[in-house]
Image (cartoon, rainbow, N blue to C red; front, side):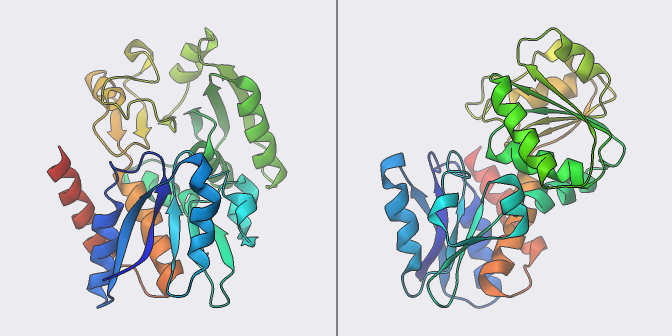
Length: 281
């Protein structure tokens, strides 16, 4: 077994990425094993530098480091540059590190698999971190009519949207609201897509939005790949829901192809991810 690739973040113990990425390596007869690399802020620079070693393929990056790793890399792809967030690092043959963002396309592919169509849609996005940047960019590029970003710190959301718009030629209607703003209820009521891109709910107890604000006509997406209180409340209100597992698999497949140059066995990866998640619950 070769520990050539892994997940950098804090925390990472909940991740099912090792299960489905290792399954993909085995499908292609490769000896690589995908590892979990819990990393403190103080350890991040050293951890990323370690990817330059011979035999390494790269890494995935999760909370809270998708933006923090950017200055530690040698080059970024166009999407990662646009959203200032990296979720995949590829070690090149010369030891240089190339940053990609596979969250954007992974999100759109997963959304459409659930019957959601972002084109001409009115969207409410909860959060303004690295994952939210990817979602916002994906929605803009897919032709969303409007995006309302709800965040505890409106200034952070405004900066995120400014970065996204500067990197595209699209011009959707945009709005930023504080999490406790009374206008949030109206924005959610008028939307077709409601997306949680925060970590609220990862503990299995909390929710980023009050249940009474969720309307039955919505498609509610939580990037957390579990049955969160947010999704439970949405279903009770009659809304359609999707957790983050399909996005995880889709973005993971794109990462696998970037590391190996091989076609990702998506069905194998999805089955392994689902099994790993069931074993955790």
